Amino acid sequence: MDESRRTPDGDIFTPPVVVRPPTRGARPYRRVEIYGRLVGKAYTAEDVAEFIRRAGVDDPDLDDPDLVGWRGGDATVWTAE
Image 1 (cartoon, rainbow, N blue to C red):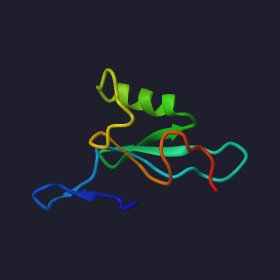
Image 2 (tube, rainbow, N blue to C red):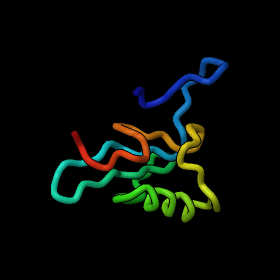
Image 3 (cartoon, helix red, strand yellow):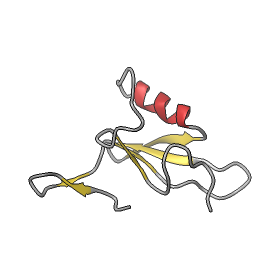
């Protein structure tokens, strides 16, 4: 999947939260960025939700593509292939 997508007006859209692909290793994690700034390592989808809550969204919908962009797999993917 591309880093961003196009809006109906043709502009490039990147969601405010980007979850990077899982790392390789004994304890894989996914880097989480909010507005381009690395905010931490997530080991579960709940970790991602907590980062978003700390950024001010009370009840984040991790399946909302306007909020979260999953790279390298969706919220169920936590190991590198």
